[in-house]
Every structure is written in C-alpha cells, then in structure tokens.
Length: 281
Length: 328
Image (cartoon, rainbow over all chains, first blue to last red; front, top):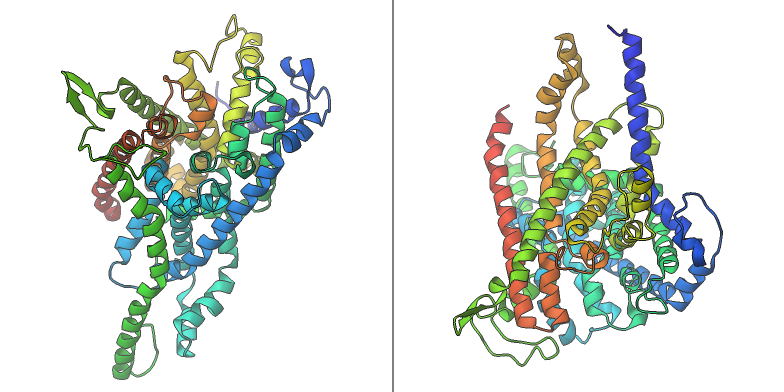
C-alpha cells in the first residue's frame, strides 16, 4: 500500500510525539518518585504507588534538622561559592592571555589545562591529603575549597578562554588605539562584556563543586562540616539495618530543587556553555 | 569556526606602514611579555593544587607510609606495585581485587559510553526535529543532568530496592519477571544497576553535544540530497554522520575520561561491592579504609597511568583523522 504524503507526515509526527513523551517520562520519573516518597511516612513508604497518597512534611523536618542536612546545605553553598569566585577571579586574566595574546608556550599551557581537567581525582588524593594536613585545613571547609580548585580552575580557564576568543577584535583595537593598557582592557573592556559568560561558567563550575563527593568524603570527618552529597550518602536511620528512605529522599529533593530551578532559569546559557567548551575544543 | 582574533596580523595599529610595523612589533613583544604575567597566578595555583599533589602521590607510592602518620615512612621501591616474597606475589598488581576493579571499570566504561552514544544520538535527532513541545523535551532532559550524582545514586538505589522498589514492581506488573530481583546485591545485576543509573544521568550531556553539532549542519545539504532522491537513511549516513563526527569524538572522549574515573555513583549505589568496585574506588579503599597510604598511592598512580594511556590513544586517533577532515 502506498501512503500519501500526508499520511506519511502524520505517521512520523506520531512517532516523534511518542518518543518525546517517553523521553520526558524517563527523565522526570525518578525525581517525581523521589518527591512522592519524601512525602510518605510509615507503612505507606513501602507500597509502590505512582500517585500522591499522603502529604507529610515530617521527612523534611527530620532530614534538615535532626540529620543536619540543613547545616550541610549551608556548607555546600559556602564551599561552592568561594571556590567558584576564586577560580573565576584567577582565570579571567589567565584566559585573556590564552585567548587574545599569541605567545610562546601558549599551546602547551592550554594542553596542560585540558589534561588537568581530565585528571582522575584519586590521582591527587594522597598528595592533597598531605597538603591539606600540612596547611592545617584537615576537617575544615578550607580543605574543600583548596582541593576543589584542582578541577574547578582548569574548567573555568578552559571555558572562559573559548568565550574570550569569540569577542570581536575591533573592540580591543579601539581600546589599544586609545592607548589603554592591558589591565584597562581586561577590567574595563572585557569584564563588562564577559558578564553573561562569567555567569554561565560560574554556574557550571558551581554545579561541579556542589556535586563533588570524593574530596568531601575524604577530607572532612565531623558531621557539622559535611557537604550535602556526603551528608546524604551517610544519612543513617535509627538502626543500622534500616535506611530512612523517606528522609533520604526528602534531603535529595531539597538539594536538587535549587539546582534544577537555577538550571531552568539559565537553560539557554547552560546549554551554550556546555557545548562551547567541547565543540570548539 | 575557530577564528582566533589575534592581534598579530597587520590589523593592530592603523598608522603609516613603516612606523606602524615597528610599533606593532613592540606592542606584540610587550603583550607577549605581559601574557606570562597574566597566566602566572593560574599556573602557580595549578602547580600547587594539581602538579604538586600528583608528584607527592607518585612519591608516596614508593613508600610504606600509613595515612595517620604520613611523615614516618621508609622507601620500599616497587613493593607496593609488585613484590615477591617466599614465592608469593604481593602488591597491587598481584591483588585479584585490583584486576577485578580494572575489569569492572573497563566494562562499565565501554557499556555505558556505548549506550550513551546510542541514546544520545537518538535523542539529539529527535530534538532536532521541529514539533510542538520541543521546548518541553529540551527542558526535561536537563533534569537528570542537573541532579547531583549522589542523589541519582540514592534515587536509583530506592527504585532498585529488592522488596519495595518500583523497578521490580513495574517489571512484575508487566509480567516480565516472576519474582523480585536483588538488583543491588546480586553480583550479576548490580553492575547493570550502576550502568542504568549512569546512562540515565549522562545521556542528556551527550544529546546536547550532538544536538549542537546537528544544528550546525547546513539545511540546504539535506534539500539537495532530497532533490537527488536520497533516502532518509542515506541522508543520515552520508551527510549527518560525517559532519557531526568530530563533535561525536569530542563528546566520546569527555564521557570516556569521566567514566574511567567513576567513584561516587558506585560508592553510594552498591557500597563499593566487589562486583562493581572501580579502580578509583579500589585506590581510595586502600588509602582510606585500610589506611595504607603507600599502597593506595601506588593504585592511584596506576589509575592515572591507565586514564592517561586511554587519553593518549584517543589523541593519536584524533591526530590521524585530522588531515582527512581538513581535506574534505
């Protein structure tokens, strides 16, 4: 049977919508189910049910207050903000030089930065442990800021360098003709245009620092200095053999929602930033 | 695409030719001198937080240091890597658990990156179509990407729960399995649980990368092919695939490097069980759980060499395919 053009079109539309619906369902379902679980208590927790049954906020109170996830949230915000701020500050000038000035050793530096960003974290673990102890930072948030620079700094440099390459050369020429020094060019000409790029890069680096687990697990011992991922991973219930799934899911939802809201607000920029680093590299 | 707006080629200062070229050169020298000044903070910091720790890790891999007293050590040569005493082999390379972790990591990397490439490509092709609700799909796929890995591990741990998990419930309702499966505890299944969680989390990244490449394919190429009577498969095989190939390789490298150093997902989802432990997990276990800083460092160095080796292979493949691309 020969299908008409219109029938073929409708057929392909059906396929597209079915596939889209499936993709959306799979992407969102685990989070949806986590939210459902976080609102259940008692026996209710252990009956698989795909629609909201009860709305108990007890799990949120338990996890945030009793299990100290609230405190960990604060720690995570502090660590990620300080790390990203410091890395951006350092990498603006570095990325400017790498993107806009031609000098010997430039390629080698860029290559090194790329290599460091692909380091397996465990390769620096014992050296970093020694360094952290030496600086007296063990079991403090400072240890995390220091160690997070290992992966945040190469990332911010790499992405910012890509962004800076795309700034039209005329702007810089005009500034040079006006006799502006390099420093003035960076702070007065580039920094303002870079605003959006800094937001994107900062956001991506923030998410990276927010999600980090291995360093946070290794360099911090005390409960009150834990970051969110460690707090969730080590969340214990009343007995050792019973995991408090309700509280775990409540904590998971609490730490995920702010990130998701951020990502949705900056959706276009994030997609641009993610692909800028790679497609051009 | 990679137009580098450098100031080196005759555009810098629009003045008289002779004077201009002299000023240009001095400007260039001055600029390249300050370039080093500008990258200096970055380089010093990188050397401090990455270079130095890496060197110390290599150093410690030749010692018998323990984690609680790293300053009391003796050199043991290569004993942490491989050592023979009384006809028995010791060291990381003689440890069956190490080799198990190598197999686990390679298997995990190969399977999950292949699945990600397949699903990612499918998703990217889907998102590249014009249809209503496109924005919704693009937004929805950012959700798995944005969720912290630890949360992903916990969510899937809960969904894969042997008694109360939804996965078993759904599979049983669909009549695919008769009784609940122990996804996390059963050695044959636990790695699949890890792979599924990882694929769920990272397909969006792959899809976005490939979508960006797809959107750069000029649409008149497809028009021309359609006029020539090329089928959908031919258009994909002859136009799309070659044009997005470079981006695909880059995305593959990123994901492979990432998968090779996997730690957190496995640590939380399957508690580093022997059936799923990764090389990073093994190295950290030696170092932190058993306090063997020397052995742990040796394992870390091996992890580093393995990842670097894979990266080198990728790079040389990239180099080999480069001249061909620039010709076409």
